[in-house]
Length: 385
Ligand SMILES: [Ca+2]
Ligand SMILES: [Ca+2]
View 1 (cartoon, rainbow, N blue to C red):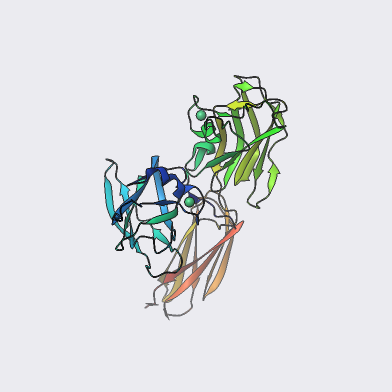
View 2: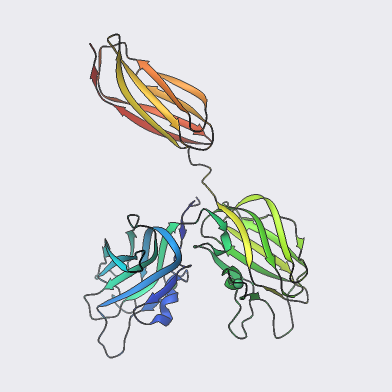
């Protein structure tokens, strides 16, 4: 089951730490169990208080922070983890959100912090406090947040990239350079050996599902022959998005457009027989995918009223979504169906109990449009006459 509309936005943040900054990146490398960052210092006097901070260039809406600690020969994890966020002025603000970790655990604990009460923010900082005289070790931090609704999926928070190869002889020009919004940095597959494989690939993983419809890039060096765009669907399998397309001459944009596909990853496989490629930016146009199994959006209510001394249950259902829905209203006094309720429209039904007094109850409302939404609308007891 794919988790629609939620992505780990921690890997797209800039991670900083109170100490041992060179290890900070290991808490967002996707490895939840390996040795990551710690606040170890020499001399045996360990910090009782350390922090890890995650910053983004635009405000993010976070729902949950998962902290995976690491057992480094003993209970090398915090006693408590507290959450701060960055306000609009850039100051760190304390919150009530914190977790206590079991110091007697045999296994390194993982904790989940509910941060859904926090405002949208450009930064989240974890305050790590320990009561023991040892270092604090964190394997990984995942921050589940709401991804951006649409745009260039390549540069959106939550997206990560990988490549079959990048020019590593000087530790530079990795695949992420093609998704940093900066045309002066590039992904390069040049090899000093001059021996080139027949293909090089670039894989974009957004962290959630996007409806993707176009890929554009401009090659600047080497002479890749073609590009084949494939995607990983919500079924976990790879499919063709488009037929292989010739790469335009250097300096000219190549654009591959196709009918929208719901993708959890997008891969560009370049034919590079005898050559390499250099691409400053790859743009992947996408819109956040919605769960097709989710039911339609409705609002329902019920109340009682008296007509000629008899109690009626009056129900109304509003279609608050963007497509038409079928609605069924069922109470103890009958049922009523509406085959088509247009977006924004409200339908009402009054069901006669044929009694002067009725007890409190509920009306069941079912709306169907692909998926099914069921709501219960309560009404109070009433006496007429
Ligand atoms: Ca890690
Ligand atoms: Ca770039």
